[in-house]
Image (cartoon, rainbow, N blue to C red; front, side, top):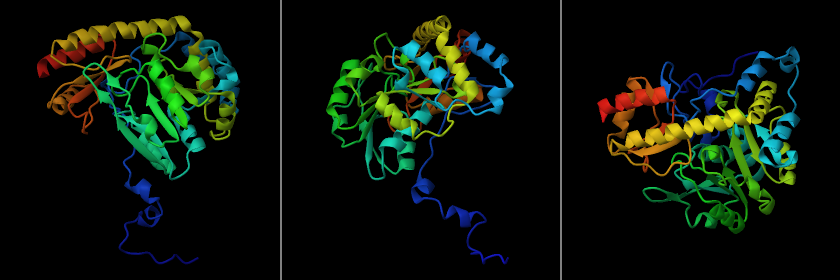
Length: 364
C-alpha cells in the first residue's frame, strides 16, 4: 500500500491536528492547581487530615474479584450508604468519578449545542470548560461583592439559561448563599438549578439544599469526597436529584464510571460519622486560627464557609505566590481580573500553618 502524499508545510502532527474541532483547538483547558512534589499543598483545597481508618481497612482487604470483575454499575451499596447518611432515597443518588464526572453527565443530559448555561462569576472554572466541550454558551453574571460577602447576582435567572450552576459555598470566594435565595432562584428559572456543594460540610448547619429536593424537582445537588472526606485521590462524587431525573441521568453516564475500590471506600467513609465530624471540627478550628494570624498582615477576605480563605493581598499577590512556591509552599493565584490581587489559601494542619506563617513574615 502506497503512502499518501503529505503537505510539506504541515508539522508532523499537523495532519491529525487539523481534524480537531476548532473550538477545542482555540479553547484554554481547565487549569488544575499545581502538583509539585515535596511541597506543602495549600492550593487545591484537599483535606489536610487523613481519611477514615475504615477506608484504610478497605484497602487492606481488597479481594481478587474486586479487581478482576467489573464494578457494580448501579453502585447499590454506595447509594444505600448515601441514603442512610443524607436522608434521601437510594433512587435519588447517582455516583460519579468525582463530582466533575457528575457535572459532565449533567451537561450531556440537558444541553445541546447552541443552548446556554449560566453561573455567577468568579466561580469554578470547569463550568466553562464543559460548556465549550458541549458546544453551549456560558453566561457569567458578576457576584455583587462586598468586603465580607459575595451576593448572588440579581439577574442570574434572566439569562435564558437551560442550566444554572451555583457553587455553594463558592469557589474561589468560600462565601455562602442563603438557602432562601437558592430556593427562590429555583422557582424563577425555567430550567435546571445545579447546586455544587463541594464544601458544604464546612458551612453552618442548615446550609444544604438536600432537605429541599422534594419541593424543587428542577434542583440537582452535588457532593464530593475530595474535601471533607479526604479522598481526593479516590475520585468520588455524588449527585442527588428527583428519582425520575436520576433514571435518565443513569443512561448518560459511562458504563462503569466508579471503580470497585472507590465505591467501597465511599461506603466506609460515609459510615464513619465520628471521624468525619472530628475532621471537620479540626479544620474549622485551624481556619479560625489561620484567620487570626493572617489578619496581623492587614489582609482581608470574604467570610469563609469552606476550608480555605480568599485573601486580598494587593498588587504583590503574584510575587508572594512565587516566593512561597520557591520555598516549597503552594497557594493559589490567578492572573486575571478580580482575582489577581488575591491569594486562595487552603486550611492546612497546624504544622503547615506554622511554616506558611513563618515564610509570610519574611515576605510581607
